[in-house]
Length: 468
Image 1 (cartoon, helix red, strand yellow):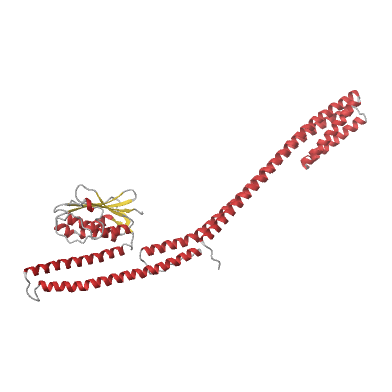
Image 2 (tube, helix red, strand yellow):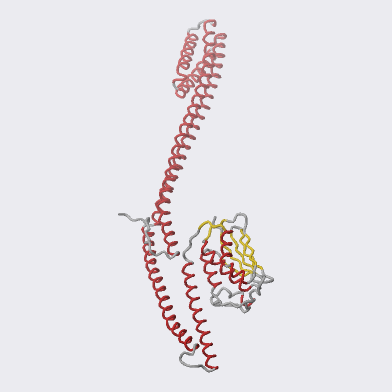
């Protein structure tokens, strides 16, 4: 089986299209040249025929004049003139007979007969009365020849127009067939080339979404088939690496949690003075150990949460979402937390509040932003959670009335395990990964999150592209 590469297929397709269009263009040029030549010949014949008919009329007048002069004066000079004019006239008649063909043959034959009869009459020296009808007949024949010549020219012009119309229809059919063939070739080439490209695009999308269970199958040109095989190798390699990563994460988690649990239980036994009573300074050491163990455990859990969020960020589930319900649901899940701080949360959405996005991930993003806003807001304060649409993008904003973010922390507030210098009004236990998770999820949805300048409190803004 012959395997054609992508470049060879493109070259072959474009060659076929160019040949079809070039053939139609060449045929059009040949038809045009033929019609121009035919029109030129017809024009030349018409001009020549008209000129010869006009000259024949002039020679007939000369014949009539010299004949009448000879009859009147019997001078041989006028007879010689008559013979000369007659010879010239007969030559014109012969040329007209060749040019016009059957359309003037009968009239030209009649002209010859009348001219011959007129010459015979002069030779026999018949009377003027007998020759006068012959002269009148020559004049009549000239008029008839002129009319017949006009009809012949008109018929030739009609034939040219008829040929032009026939060639126009034939040429139109050829052009239509050429365009149809070119379109068919372009469609076939497009289907042959676009289908494997779409398969590659779908395969890359599945790899980006960490769906490694489906093999990569690509048809079409041989080089794209090879690329599909390389992508399938990459799929297997990524699946292996992802499996190793999850296995290593589970192993590290187990290796850390097991001794940490034993250490935590040992500290609890010491705190309860099971091995024996503790002195004051010993109890202080035990409290420090317990505090650090609790902090270490929280760091490990936060690290696991951050890795889990980074993994889930690659799995998008885009759908049409009612933003009013989404924001209200996020606030409802934090209702107890809001009431404990005696806060007021305002939800604002536009009239057309349907957007295409991943509702689950967006809920996690808004929940993290709202949780931080609740922790840092003063009691009795107000939090604004709003969504708006502008310039083909959706904007989600969370605005609180807390201490805000210090200027030196603004650039690194989204980094893992970074906590700002400004403290929350109430006691909170955070690890500094909430905003990092927000950034990971927002980037996965093709957007960005930023901290905007505000006179009071913190103002976080999430921008997502509007794909509708």
